[in-house]
Image 1 (tube, rainbow, N blue to C red):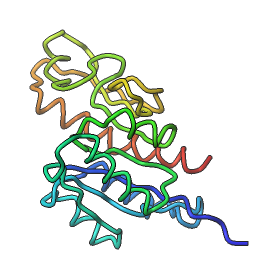
Image 2: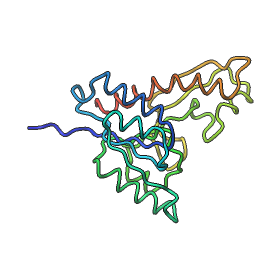
Image 3: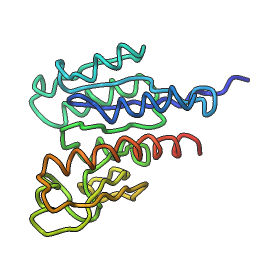
Image 4: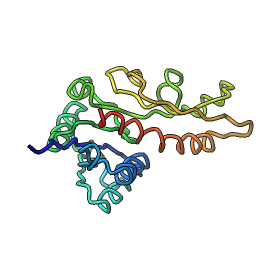
Length: 196
């Protein structure tokens, strides 16, 4: 009896550095052999997303569903879900996917949809997290892997990493320090989910 593969579909809008970290972790950790899991597809809403090239180089199926081709968020999300569902995903991973998803889309993937956010949730939901942390005088910042729910950045926390906020930090230097931790905790959280 063959074991059903656990397919991971990753959504990106740009370079997909967290996607690349997950792909490398899957290769290095032999997820296919150990967990019957694979990154089955990388899908972007932008045809020029640099991460698509990385995925192709690693033999991963890619697709583009351009949000500009749709009149409504709902129509885009319906088309995006159809493309995702072709790969029968066990897990859908948001990796710098810069679209607010509709409640119907989130409900369709309930329990299977995760995201990484560049703050220590529940602090600093939304955008400009690094500058807001600096402006508030925070001594620490970080990143959070969480389940996606209809409420922005409010799902169950799956993993977190903490970094110091240094006296001379700018939003850019703090973002770079946080990103190095994102590349560690996101693959770890994904592996934990697909190993269960």
